[in-house]
Image 1 (tube, rainbow, N blue to C red):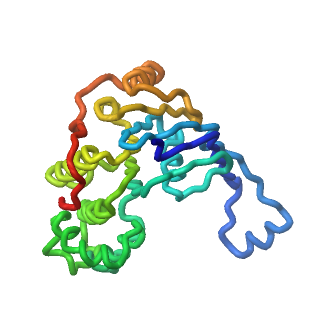
Image 2: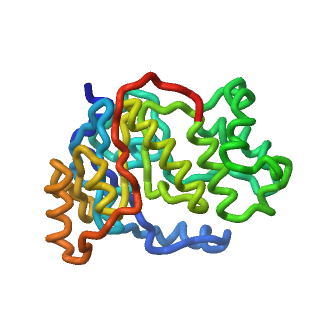
Length: 265
């Protein structure tokens, strides 16, 4: 069964040539209409993600990878075409959006949990697990403005993984925090993979994509170059760019096995 289906997907942005920030500029601009440049971020994208599949998305910066993920997450609406998402989706795109530096860790968990789609009861029941997973027991009443960037990311990631996703959207967020926390994150993602969670994985780490993804989509300047077997697509990308020699991946393989889903971390 397909859990995500995109058909003839297009995304267009209108970029103004002139920025108006003051009242005077806005008033005088009435008699001088702003000109816009049309930017095609995505052009006629067609793909599907099967249940329990790990789909990779690769391409150079500006190829449309993050825009495509944001459309899947319903952050952006497509300009034309359609996309259907049939299961609960958890986007790991920009961790920490919605955090307030003047709030404590506990207060931000409540806010961020709501943003990630958790109920008040779920947030209340899992706050202790979130704090423990992030390793912030001593800092739960500390304001975030006194946190390091790594502590912020640990708190965001620890909150986001509590949503029990059916589909995961990952945009270069596998290497977060220090080495110990990275290993903890990878074990959690491996568990999700084992349990049959569908994953869409955007990364510049081609060896990680090659080691873990069932199929891969190659984008370039918003266009779909090819969708197919991961090894073939990665080799095609290397041939086109000629700048990504094979190297050892830092990400372990997220192999699947059969066992019952658990909410314990």
